[in-house]
Structure formats: C-alpha cells, structure tokens
Length: 234
Image 1 (cartoon, one colour):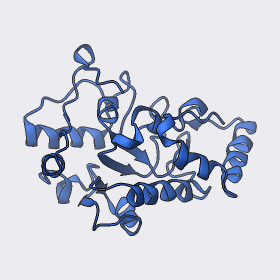
Image 2: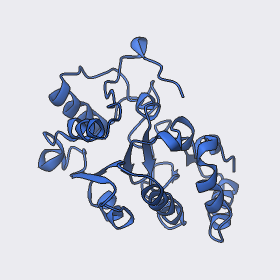
Image 3: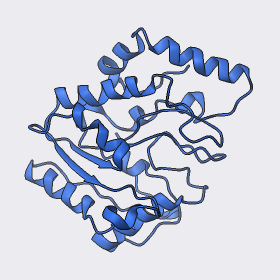
C-alpha cells in the first residue's frame, strides 16, 4: 500500500501505520485485490486527504462515511468527485446551501480540492470501498484508524470547526473536546434528508464566523467552473 501524505502528518499517521491493527487492513485489501475485486479509490490515492491539507494549518474537518462506490466516482476527499464525473445528489445539495448562503452559482463539476488547499480536511471515516457495494469496508479497522486521527486533531489543536452531517458523523463527537473546538451538526445533504436540517443551516457562514473570531482567514467556499479554477497551493 502506498502511503502518500504531506510530511506535516507524519507524527500522527506513522503511529497508526505501526499499530497492531493496520497490517489487518493491508492484508484485507491485498486479499480483495487477489480476488480481482475493484476497490476505490486506487491504492495511490487512499491517503490523499492528508496530502492537500497541511496539519499545522488545519481549520475545518468535514467527515463522511466512505468513498463513492460508482465507477470512477471515488475521490480521496469526502463528498468530492473528479472533475469529469457527474456531480452526485448530496454534493448538489451542498452547492444549493452555498448558493443560499453566498449566492454562489452551482459549478459544473464536483471536485472540492480547493477547499482542501485552504486547510479543510475532507475525511472519509472509512478510506476504501468495493465497487458498487457502499459501506462494504466498514469492518476492516478503518474507523479505528480515522478515530485515532480525529482524537489527535482534537487533543493537539484548538478551535478547529468540525462539520458533522448525519448520525454517523455525529457519533464521532465523543472524540472531540468541545471546550477547545466547535461542532456544527446537521442532517446529511442527501436528497432523502437534506430538507430536514441541512438546507438553510447556514453551516458555511457559521464556520467562517467562528474562524474570524479566532483571527483566522475564512474559507472561500466558492467552487469555480472547470475553466475558472483558482489555485491556492500549499
């Protein structure tokens, strides 16, 4: 397994890579590949959520369950897809909320890399999935891996904004010290639940207000069309 990540995450990730359970994850994925099963994302991209976002500059964490399971859909950033893939319904609702809050027009793609480059960690709690089988890798220790990362982020930092959409993400509240950090909750942006609590939640504006109170630069949440992409760099 290729473990690509930004050097700023080394002290966190290496401890998990050296744990007793991590070889079990590697062994499972190797066995699945030997059975010619299609696993998303590709091996080179499993840890890329930790590549675009530097640890010491982290501002926001957006947590989701696992990668998209459709052909070519899976990106290494939660809720994000490659630019040539049709924008999924949940992400379209995220764009609707941004349109309501900031009057942004809805872009023609679903790549959220520009958020990651502004220190928003787009983290899937489960980092791999079998093609066409959502939540198929829920029992292979990935949550132990990402739970430890969430807790270390909480322990070592202050005033990170955690956006927890849906019950699955909200179960991670026990890992977060709310005396040092802020949690913003809502329903999942899925078409089945977005109208309950996500749409009109003002979660992105609230996040920026919290950051500004801590003298941090707010996030530019606008996603430009393919021919208008901005580069923030790291």
